[in-house]
Amino acid sequence: MSRVYNFSAGPAVLPEEVLKEAAEEMLDYRGCGMSVMEMSHRSKMFEGIIQEAEADLRDLLNIPDNYKVLFLQGGASQQFAMIPMNLMKNRVADYIVTGQWAKKAWQEAQKYGKANKIASSEDKTFSYIPDCSDLPISPDADYVYICENNTIYGTKFKELPNTKGKTLVADVSSCFLSEPVDVSKYGILYGGVQKNIGPAGMVISIIREDLITEDVLPGTPTMLTFKTHADAGSLYNTPNSYCIYICGKVFKWLKKMGGLSAIKERNEQKAKILYDFLDESSLFKGTVVPKDRSLMNVPFVTGNPDMDAKFVKEAKDAGFENLKGHRSVGGMRASIYNAMPAEGVKALVDFMRTFEKENG
Image 1 (cartoon, one colour):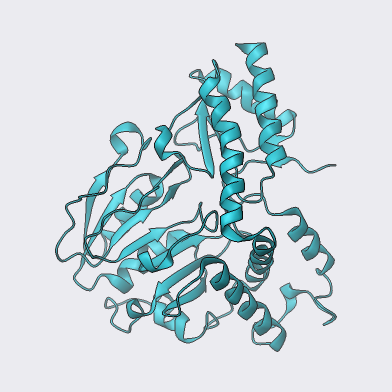
Image 2 (cartoon, helix red, strand yellow):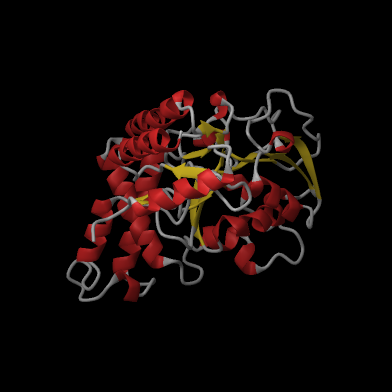
């Protein structure tokens, strides 16, 4: 069977050449006679894998020297608790709620202190990014939190909020490594890797060193303290070693593709193909305010749930997988991450055009 075009929001499509390379090395990694899956995380061989992965990630993002890179388990959702536990010294934080995941993070933070919702786009089903140029930032806030790209709703912060000098914490799970980023604008930049970088089961957190201290909230577990992992080079306990290995391969692939500027250009071209079609279509329409559209996640609807269901079914039969929208919003969503080839987007638009003719 040939590979399908997989538009899943995560776990998501990975570069084919990375998968082939991993397949070749599955039983014997570089002549060591075993798989990376079987390898001790304390071995010289694995030390090389994790160090090279970190070096390539630092290179791709131009990560300043005063930031640590942590490979952590528990996914992005565990960070919803880990961040307040480590950062909420004054027990106050400000949250900008632009989707389901920011909302969950805000709700979780309320367990540890006062989490203020200082802006939200929930009034219009999270279909836009609110103006964040002059927000009521709390004078004693420990940080300001955003989810930079909203996987479910397909919106993206094109400009970072004015945090008035407060530390910015951003969940970048679904736009991680999709474009160049100035890491120095963030205190913490983190993301689950299963959308744009690797297999499920890990989060990468890039943290400014002054935020990594022993001064955490009382009762914070050892495993949920940033310093534990920073001091041990992400090897305090057994890490998700196979995931780190695959992510490392994806970093190499991104470098080979020309780095993040080249990837951004490619992502813009791919997204334009789909958005241009949605803007001219008489059957399908995008659900996001054009200026806030994500390059990674493109939600769209026909306006008729039965027609949406028919489209998803026929698309699946034609080899376009995982186009059903998130259960909380319905409709359709095409996630077109770095590894989705332009041919996949073009083929989808051709299919949509035909479907429109037959059902319009």
